[in-house]
Image (tube, rainbow, N blue to C red; front, side, top):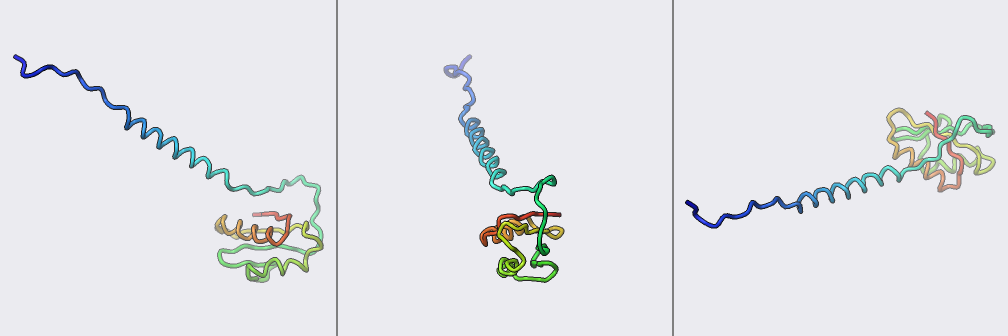
Length: 124
């Protein structure tokens, strides 16, 4: 005994799965782009350049800067480096303290580059 007309089995819709795959694709494409935004020039140990002149060591703390052991305000750093340098191409050594965020190192490096200093070396 049948109570109605038989209906065909309904196939599952693929539209939600296609939407999810598309969203995952967009997410991973954007996530992959974030890894390429940061580029820092790295110095190699085999360079022919010799450090010359007075010391120019900038120690970057969590909330302080020190130039050759003397605490200094971040905005005064380029002016304090000026008498220690014979040319803007002289080397300035940056040393971040333990646990200093990378963003702080980049901010100090950017301020020195904005002041016209072209050779910044980062050491551990």
